[in-house]
Image (tube, rainbow, N blue to C red; front, side, top):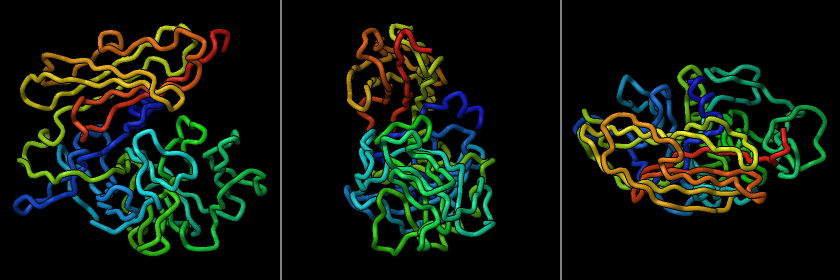
Length: 355
């Protein structure tokens, strides 16, 4: 899994999880959310946060563990709370908007008030000298700092209440860090069952302790946050029907100069046993604003993993003029399949005279 995230260290497999699908009973077996079957096979633990009603702060949490090619439920459903304004749309989370980011994010770091906590994650006890910077103008934005009280806007990690007694960092906007796109997104203890958060995901203290004990870094846990869609009943022996296509982006370089060739690969895995046609939507966002959208089609998608270069997959060259400097986000998703969260990569374009 470390190798996976080294290859895709700026890749964030995120976006709309429409059709995340609350688990349902199929005979005597629970059918897992369809999105789990699109995760990399090295991911063996997943926390699913689902909001059923647009704009609602009330959510439901389930946790899942991979066993060979199937997922089994471990905890939940538990009640939870998200941001006071619900979920942000894909690419829509901004600092102070009161929304929880939608997507798939790693869970690696835990913290809390106690010296030691039973967890398989990296754990740090916090003091009143531990802070999280939330000022977008600060070079330490969305970072944990320790020392004197910062002179810029920040959050104290050793709060005077129990909200951060047990907490896990949701690795949103942490690699790379984009100013103003949101900071300090955690899993933590709720104030009560009716009070929303400022953008985090919160639950009962007992559930938070159970989750911490279960999470193991060696199993590469992630959290999936999305709005629920239709429930799925399908052949439990054929997990591929939940998500026939898996899409990834692998970049050769994540920092390029003006007019330097952009090289990358779109990797599509067709889990359906037959060759399929497919239509893909390609979007480019420049510094958060959509710049390009186009459609490309594949007439015969083989029933195995296949690769397409950026050039033959229809992704345009986008760094040929001076205004191209800054962050570019490349997004590829299956056209017309709103339940397919997109693959994406972030590329930084620098001046031709830069390092």
